[in-house]
Amino acid sequence: MDQNASKEFLTKRGLNYEENDLGPVYGFQWRHFGATYKHKEIDYKGLGVDQLQNVIDMINTDPTSRRIILSAWNPSDLDKMALPPCHVMIQFSIDKEFIDAQMYQRSGDMFLGVPFNIASYSILLHIIGSITGYIPRYFHHVLGDSHIYMNHIDAVNKQIHRIPNAFPELILKEKINDIDSIDENIFELKNYNSYPGIKAEMIA
Picture 1: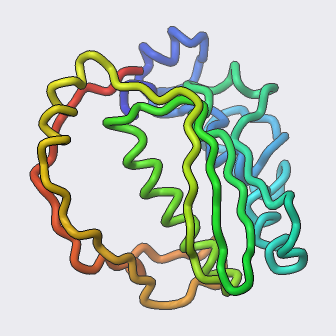
Picture 2: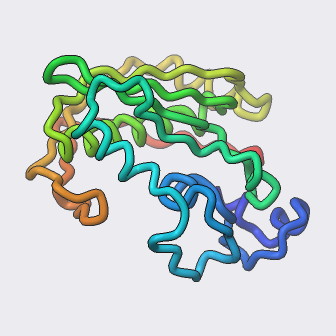
C-alpha cells in the first residue's frame, strides 16, 4: 500500500496529509465512525462510534441479531481517504456454538489484494470468536468487481500452475479477552509451507 501513501498520490487525491497518512480509512471507521478526522497523530479515543466494540457487545448480548455489522464505507469521509475502502463491510452471525462471517468487497485485485483480504478477515473472525467464546467456522467472501490487471498476467499464470500445499492451521495459544490488548505472539500457523513469493506491481 506504499503507493497509496506517497505524497505524490495524496496530492493527486487533493489531500494535504503527510506521507504515510491515509486519512480516515478502515481502522478509523471501525473505531471512530463519525468523528472528525484531522491527521494520524491525534488520539481519537472516545470519539465517534466504536463499531468494533459494538459488534463484540452485540454478540454477547443479542447473538441472534441480524445487525451485527462492521462498516468501513462512510460517504461523508470518502473524499478525505487516500483510497475509498475496497472491503466495505462484514456481518457476523451466530449459529449455536459457532460464529460465521460474510464480507462484501466492492473491488478486488485478485492476485495481490484478495488473498490478503481472505487471510486478514479470517483472522478477525478468530479474534472475535475468541473474545466472545464462539468457535470460528465459515468465512464467506462476496466480491462486486473482481479483476486481474494486465501487468499481473505473467504472475497469475505462474501461480495457477503451482500445486497447492496442504492448508496450515491457525492456533491461538491463549484466549483473547480484550480487543485492545492483543499480542501477536499468541498466533501460531501450524504446518505452514509456501512456495517462493511472486512479485507484481500494485496498481493504485
